[in-house]
Each structure stands twice: as structure tokens, then as C-alpha cells.
Length: 218
Picture 1 (tube, helix red, strand yellow):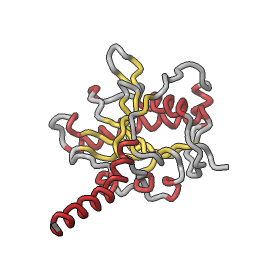
Picture 2 (picture 1 turned 90 degrees about the vertical axis):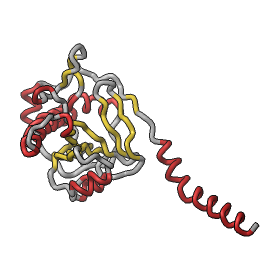
Picture 3 (picture 1 turned 180 degrees about the horizontal axis):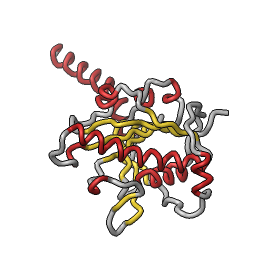
Picture 4 (picture 1 turned 180 degrees about the vertical axis):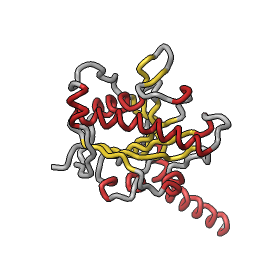
């Protein structure tokens, strides 16, 4: 009887310890983004003139429409008939993924469905860089390359190609932010092994760069 009671008590204690985490994970649901607004905006030459890096951010959340537009501008599907994107991809391998770290958790941008898929119900913004502002800004984009989509090329070549493709995507974000009055900066100072572990990436998934986005700090 005492043994059964002890076992039952251990089971209850275990459930109490893990249930909050499980409940929190269950609360992180897919987020259907809004239809991107592809008309309007400022003239390209003015946006290029105003493009800049900023390292001071407000903690104000981005509206859903702004986030939706920005992700589409970054690497969304602009030719539905072929699935091709707003940024070039070498040999159209489309090995780049955009992860979005927010206060609510970590999401993966599914460009074809234009939806945010939940990855982690945990705020890992502080792990996306060594700078203090990364945990204050509402959004940190993490650019991850899936080397498994790049064939038998040398790993060094995969890094070069993925870095170039990340440059195209991050510049799209810069231009969108300049058009909309947002602050942004692309970053390379990242503890990549620690971040890849926190994101639960596979060995053939590599963090290339990150980019912080938010409203300018007033």
C-alpha cells in the first residue's frame, strides 16, 4: 500500500512539474498571416536613399499586417505559378528558411502558405545575438540554411551560396523597413552553436545571420 501511494505521489508530482510547460507549448498555434499589400509604398530611389542600420529599438509589437508584408517582401512567393520568391536563390534550391523569434516564441515562416508555423513556445530572443537590444526588439529574424537541399557541394561552397542568398533576403527587409519607417540591423555576432541548439536544428541546418526589426526607440 505504501509503495503504491509513493508511486502515485511521484506520478502526480511529475505531472505537476511538466504540465505548465506542456500547456504553454500547446498554446503556441500556427499564425495565418494577412494577405501582403503589394501595391503602394515609397519610391524605390527614396527607399535606397533612406536605407540604414539602427541599433536602438522600441519594444512595441509589430502589427500583423506589417509583419505579414515584411516577411513577404523578405522571401515570399511572388510568382505562385512557379513558387519562385522575392529574392533570388541559386539554382532555385530555396534552401533558406526564416525563423522569427518573438516574446511569444519561435516560429518558422512557411512562404508557400504565408503562415507562421510554431517551433518553440519559448522566448529565445536573447540567444539570437550578443547585443543587448536583441531581447528588447519585438522581432529577430534568424536566417537558416538547410544544407540537405544543396546536393553534394563542398560545405564551404554551401556557406558561400547561403551567405549570398541571405544577403538578398536581408536587403529586402532593409528596403521594406526604410519604406515603412522601421528600424533594422543585420547581425553576425551570434553564438551559433548555442542558438542552433536552442532552436533544435538538425546538424545539416546552419544559422547564417540574424536581423533585428522593430520601431525606432523614441
